[in-house]
Amino acid sequence: MDLQEQLKEIVPANRMEMEKAKRHWDSLAKPLGSLGRLEEAVIRLAGICGDYRKIKMERAALVVMCGDHGVVEEGVTQSDSSVTKIVAEGFTCEKTSVAIMAKSVGVDVFPVDIGMDTDTYPESKVIPFAILNRKIENGTNNIVKEPAMTVEQCKKALKIGIDLVGELKKQGYDVIATGEMGIGNTTPSSALASVLLDIPVETATGRGAGLSDEGLERKIKAVKKAIARFEGEQKKDIFSLLAHLGGYDILGMTGLFLGGAIYKIPVLIDGFISSVAALCATKISPESIDYIFASHISKEPAGQLLIEALGLKAFITCDMCLGEGTGAIAVLPLIQMGIDVYTKMRTFDEADIEEYIDYNKKAEEKRND
Ligand SMILES: Cc1cc2ncn([C@H]3O[C@H](COP(=O)(O)O)[C@@H](O)[C@H]3O)c2cc1C
Ligand SMILES: O=C(O)c1cccnc1
Image (cartoon, rainbow, N blue to C red; front, side):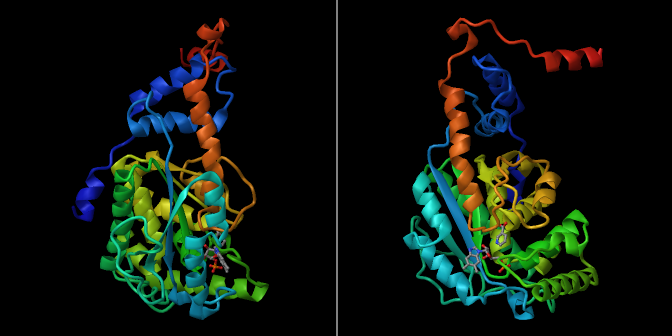
């Protein structure tokens, strides 16, 4: 199926099942709404899976999109692109933060070479495999000087993410966590955030993996130049924006979010880069938001703004800014606890306690009368 046809499959989550899930929560023998965001998440999961009695999140896959960025030559990062490969290979042998965290909560990690500036890994269409070869190109072009990629390559990256979700769902995974590895990827992410949120470049740009004051100044200048170059272009639809200012890792993640909506499976945002990728998905398909969950608030300056712009609420703050999928992995046990309470807890009736009255709802009904 081609990309446009796949995107037409996206429909909102099932509101009736969400209502039923809410009613089930309200029947449980505890104060109404007292598990807050855990309850909201489970309600949304009911709408995604389409049956409020069949919510499960037993098998989680973390997909880490790995790609390099030509803009690194502008001095916008502390390290160079060779680090992408070193860290990506560390995902396969529990030598990176997220691989260790994933192991401790039983999540399978799928690193994907979607655009690393490296030799091509042996071809494999079969999952699991150490590093999946979905390479489009050896890194992007320098966005300060030219578009990161062609529109065709951009659509290819989106499709790679979408198809991967389809493959993983077929293998029995019922939730996807997103992650990325790509030295320099906070620079295109800041450019996209600034354009899509219509916020000053300074607000959208942070120190990434660690930059001096001078480095941050260089990065802000590079982002401004890249945006000015794009704004000089005639064609400004979403795909051309993504091709100009994106990255293979970022757009691969955007594909994962779209894939979640197409294949009806929840997809978790990680940090700053991942939030930008999610925002891009909602610009392509606004309905995809029903399938997207925020995890934490990245410490990058636009972290909170992005989650708010998506209309989501994060589970934790935590002051993390690592990427790789670390934040997404960190909240999976929380969501699982929500599901466990939802499916296992006794009702007011079973506990022989009189049902609670929803005074908030009553007051709202009164106001509406
Ligand atoms: C050793 C190392 C491991 C990482 N793991 C994630 N990132 C994070 O930092 C990068 C983005 O920051 P910037 O745009 O400043 O390069 C991404 O690869 C992101 O995943 C890392 C960065 C480094 C250096
Ligand atoms: O929040 C993130 O995802 C992030 C921030 C800085 C560097 N790498 C990742």
